[in-house]
Structures are given as structure tokens and as C-alpha cells.
Image (cartoon, rainbow, N blue to C red; front, side):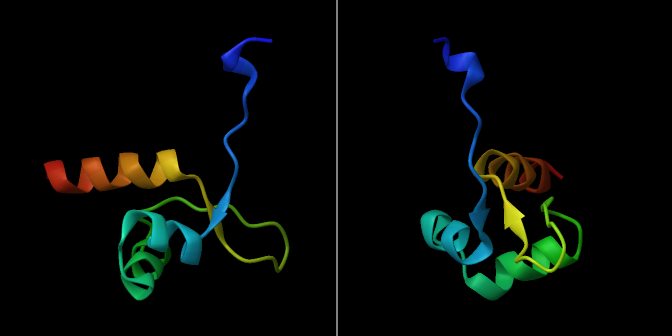
Length: 63
């Protein structure tokens, strides 16, 4: 099986903030302000992909 078929998992905002060592509320604000994209199905918690968080951080830092 090829690595191209691997699907990146979603993580909670709390888990992503821990992995990137960002304060939870800072990341939550970035998600709510539309800086970091999120995914949500129904009333489930907002989920993000670490690659999208990293890309948003790079893009925001470049501005």
C-alpha cells in the first residue's frame, strides 16, 4: 500500500494546542476567527488537522 492513501486524522483543539505548545484559548480564538480551518459534524467538537494548523501558522507568520 502506498503512503499516498494515508488519511490524516483529525485532532481536538485541546490536543493540537498541546502538541504545538500553544495556549488552548489562543488556538480556539484563531479557529473562531477563521485563521485556522476546522471541521465539525453536527454538534461534535471542532476538529482540526495538524497540517492545516501548521500551514495557517506559516501563512500568518509570513504576513
